Length: 101
Image (cartoon, rainbow, N blue to C red; front, side, top):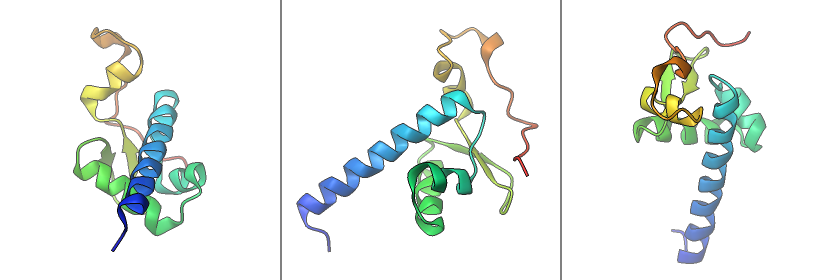
């Protein structure tokens, strides 16, 4: 069981990783689990746990299945992440995105 102080540190680190991910997704249409692991320095299982936890809580969306699964901003987040005030032309189309091989 984690102490309160250790739990606070873990939560802060998770928030920092989420912030880093969101900054990345403002510049890129998607991220893979491997890319997220490289971005954060996390090992495969922890990177997967982070990403899928955020998908479950609807912070992220996902497309595809392993090993080609990609993680994206949820559709309602995409236009705001690009700085758009709500007009649709800057919205990113995500239906046909394919991971880089």
